[in-house]
Length: 163
Image 1 (cartoon, rainbow, N blue to C red):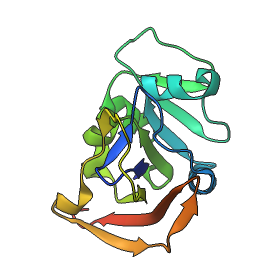
Image 2 (image 1 turned 180 degrees about the vertical axis):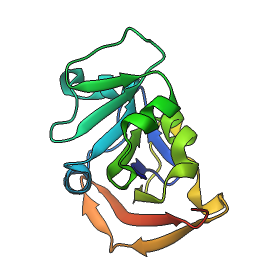
Image 3 (image 1 turned 60 degrees about the vertical axis):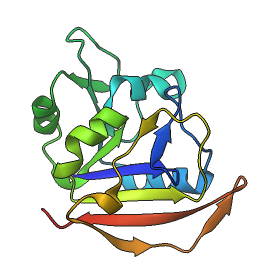
């Protein structure tokens, strides 16, 4: 299982259930990596997508506390155990948010495909764990800087040495 996320320099990932930055090159990378796989996300993250619709070309597993929740194109589960069972092909399982889902599943992820923005977002209210301070997480690769929409960022891939 892998996670994929964009963070600012303070490891912030969101504000008011939305993204902090508009990064078209990062979105292309996200699509290329997750296409054909399974994405695992929380219900509020699903609601933040255009029209609240699931991501096309991927199996969407949504974790929610509401056992009655249903939406076309998603597999709805109420526990992490059920989510992992539903997404049994761990090689192609992508944790895509939100904050509590990342935190709950990070220790089970083999890799994190992280986009690190060299800026601090204003008013951020959701954060990703700082991998540089967690034991067992090591940087595997760092891309050259990308400049887009007034910010500079790098793709930083981490590997979990605990797995």
